[in-house]
Image (cartoon, rainbow, N blue to C red; front, side):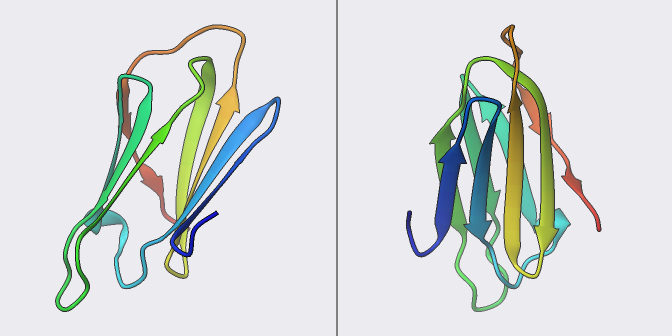
Length: 93
């Protein structure tokens, strides 16, 4: 646990939460690169840029991202077979 992020992993899912206050969905990029979750929050006015990198389970079924009140939550459902790299879109709520 950190003041800026939290990671919880269970048998069926991994949940990553990051504080990215002051930004909207368009100011955050989320990618999967070589089994790593890479989150980049762009600089906005006086708020500095942020970058988070986490290892991901190699067996992923689905990945969903949501941004609510400055907290970005990414949920990774753990599957029985491996998945490929790709970009993740933040769901608007």
